[in-house]
Length: 489
Image (spheres, rainbow, N blue to C red):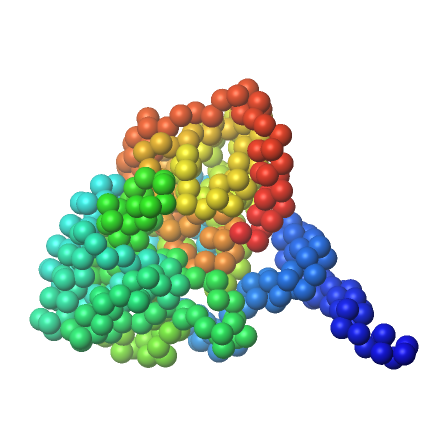
């Protein structure tokens, strides 16, 4: 009878659960994640029997698989060779007398943490009209003579996005080498449609980035996504920024947040090779194709000076950069002396980023944070609001944008230095996604970006600290509860 009771399923579960919690908790501790992340996982593992353990095993670690880890290591060797060539050609001979000591420090930080040097002789055009962005991309693709590299998180049918697709097909039919890498999960509805086959039928090399599936779950996390947006044409022109390959008039119209509001930059000069190398690296990880063949087909070459901007390209992601992007952001925020303006659709900062913003406001910097009034993630919306009290108390101006889902990711400091790219100010972008960010050391671009940010401010309402304090207990409790799991969002 005793053995029967001992072997009863309920007793087995009663014994197994604490043992499982202890074992997985030890694993969490030994992995040494950020303290907030570790505590969030420990609470979830202990509070939700078995389910918390399952979630941790699925998404608790930045597992990328041994094969991908080895491939990234091989890429680092190739990137070092490219960097040596770039140095020999003089593209990293930046005139540092034009810049402050903090900018020189940021360059050294990017070089030390990610091997990414600042290149000179770049030009960039900031475009914020999404219809004009798609039309100009179509014109650039139609002008392609030798190659086109394209990488996006989301592709969505409809509107002017379809014209880009037709231009890519026309390019392939006239002999242009076309490689397209689209995230498997971010663009999942598109992958189920007819357009992927149309591209392949035209002879275009199309691959899903980080494919998902049950088997792959055991190799690495399935929520690690390629969030980059990169286009490189003929090795001469490049695009990057916040915008996916979608026409906002036809994208997520039922989400109740309005049209997505984005911006992109069109680049020429030496920075084109840096962006091409980032996309090519992702392509190699998915296909195993040799870098020599891709570089030859893409027609990559060191460009002559095309403008006055000095730009540092910072690719980031699991297995590639550690906390490099976060450290660059912290350096930029800490360098601000007069004004700091930030735009992000999703605000879920880690403790260090939050403290940097509070510290900037505390030392007298005018900090203005612009976020959309409505976002497409309910959990993120409430988790973000839990940070408002501290930011408002420190004097940070929080502006709620009402013209749609503001999706532009940008930071501008003192009219001199800018960050522009694909990374949100949340822990997913900083730790889990593969992103690409431009750190632009050029005052003219900073002024143009500041003008764009002002248009967002003009269409926003500043959050009133007194009014915010009077929100209901229910709202506060929900916000603070979701903040506990914000490291996991």
